[in-house]
Amino acid sequence: MVLHSTDKYFSFLTIFVIGIAIVLPGCREKDYSSVPFHLSSTVDTTTAAVGDIVHFQVWVEGAGNKKIDFPQYRVDNPNISIGNRRMIEGEFRDNYGVEFEITFWDTGSFELPPYSVDILTSSGDSVDFSMVTDPIFVEVISVLTDPQPGLKDIKPPVPIPIVIPFRLIFKVIVLIIIVGITIWLWKKRVPTIREKETQYIPTRPPFEIAMERLSKLKKCTFETDQSIEKYYSWLSFIVKEFIEYQYFVRAIEMTTEEIEMSRRLIPVDVQLFVEVIEVLKRSDFVKFAKFRPSKDRCKKDLEVIEKFIQFSKLEWGIKTKSTEFGAMNERI
Image 1 (cartoon, helix red, strand yellow):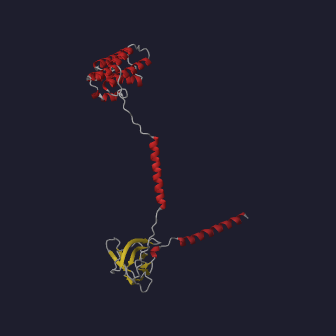
Image 2 (cartoon, rainbow, N blue to C red; image 1 turned 180 degrees about the vertical axis):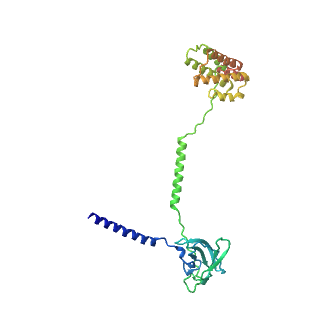
Image 3 (cartoon, rainbow, N blue to C red; image 1 turned 120 degrees about the horizontal axis):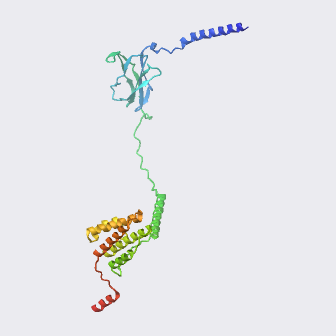
């Protein structure tokens, strides 16, 4: 029983292999080189209207390895114009051609002349032979359907009703009102504040005020960092206050760099002014950079400021109410 089943299996396998050997040769790819070489032409329509575009195609089939040249299509008819040209390809490798767009500008029956195709030699530098297509006839009809067209009567002008854009006018009015209310509210919200210039007239000469404060500052002991910081804060304030009241320069509100740039407003010795600027810069380091100078340096900076104030001293005449009334009585 086992041997019988094995023989049956080998018989089936043999038949299957023989069948495959018979079918495979028939499944080989079709040899398109055996297709005969021929040329054909066609149009997408043989009836067109004036101004329509007709697509004229020239096809080559079975070209194989032949080199084909498609020249420009020329038609000696002023009512026929040749437009765009493009290459087209068919389903198979050796099936291709060229397409032209043709436009007719008059009615009647038109003949599309034969188109010549050049088959080149194997080197491709010369023409081996040429083939031409058959002529094609195209009927061109008019776009007018009336058999006897003529000029129609001129229609009178149609009156155009006056359209008032109420919605646009309403939107513009609302926009103007909103803008006006916004401007009014803004002006009411931000009142105009005019800064009145106030002139400060000290009751004592700036020299006396500065020297009195320097004498108090000399009592500083420089024992802690806080005392040194406070010492330089007062030292810079005293000299700035003196410059402001002596030369009417807003030194208290200015930085050290701004005071340095205002050199021409302070008529003092240049070297002395430079030393004062150095003291002010050192004061900034103490206040903002936690710089701690020595006690000798602190005392020398005070001496520089004191020297500056003494050399910049001006004579001040302080008017009192009694002197003003006395002068008024003398004029009377």
